[in-house]
Amino acid sequence: IVIVALIACWNISALVNREQPKKSVDAIREEIIPVAKLTTYEYNFTEILQFSDANRDLFDLFDVPFTDNNFIATVDGITSIGVDAEKLECDAELNESGDIVSVTIKLPHSEVLGTTIAHDSLKVYHQQDGLFNTVSTTDYNDLLARVEEQQEEKILKSDALAESDARVQELIEMHLNTMLGEGVTIDFKYLDD
Image (cartoon, rainbow, N blue to C red):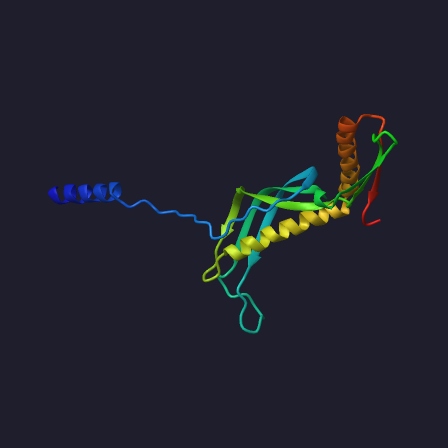
């Protein structure tokens, strides 16, 4: 009984005094860059990530047994649509008294400004690692890169960019009307037309 009690005390002591895992994050590069982006729409999505692989033999004739790996998960993200406002050009026409009577805005067409993946939204539904063939961070990162590509392709195939162009004009016109008054003529021209 004394031996069992000593073993129990030792295990409890080891559990209580065990070192906590150390986690550290240090920046190796930091930079603040000025940008001027006018985001008109955000496209929210949930994407299914699916990966499977098997080690093949030297001659690529058959799968090596017990080396299959699979990964099925979902991840959320946002794709931003809008214009690079740094490329906007503005010309104003004045009357004899120096008041603005018309404004011409030259702007680029809308584009995909970027996709942000919410990494904390990752939900793994199935993961199976094969013998000597595990799902790696490279596999996961490749899937995330493919998600970003697919979202951009979806935006380009839809009419979202044309809708964004109309929304950009609406927002700029509303802003200029507030500053200059309703009597000012506002024209829009696209830089790449």
